[in-house]
Length: 111
Ligand SMILES: [Zn+2]
Image (cartoon, rainbow, N blue to C red; front, side, top):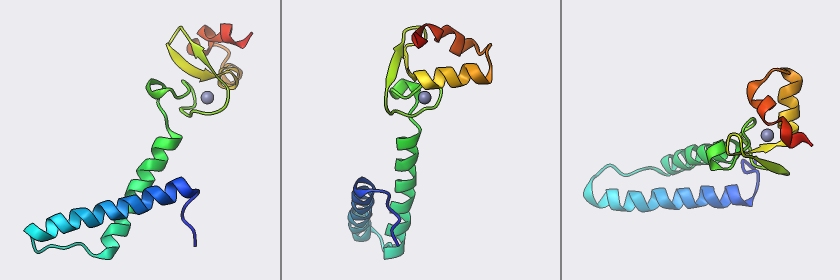
C-alpha cells in the first residue's frame, strides 16, 4: 500500500505526524487528554489532502492559470486581467463558447 504520489508528499506527511507528536507532548504536559497514534495519522491525512488541493488548485492570484487554476507548462501573461494563462486554455474556452468575454479579451495572446 502506498498512499503517496511522490517523495514530497511522503515527506510532508511524515512532517505532519511529527508536528502532531510535538503538539501532543505540549498538550500532554498540561492536560490528561493525550492523542493516540491513530489521531496523528488522521491529522496527517487531513493535512495531506489540503496540501494536494493547494498543489492542484492554484488561484490566478497565486500565479495559476485564469481558466484551469493550475500552474504548469507554457504559460503566457495576460495584461488585460493581470494573470497567467495557458494558451491552450484560451483556445479551449473559445471553442466551448466563441463569445466567452474573458477569452475574447485574451485572444491577442494566441498569435
Ligand atoms: Zn490553464
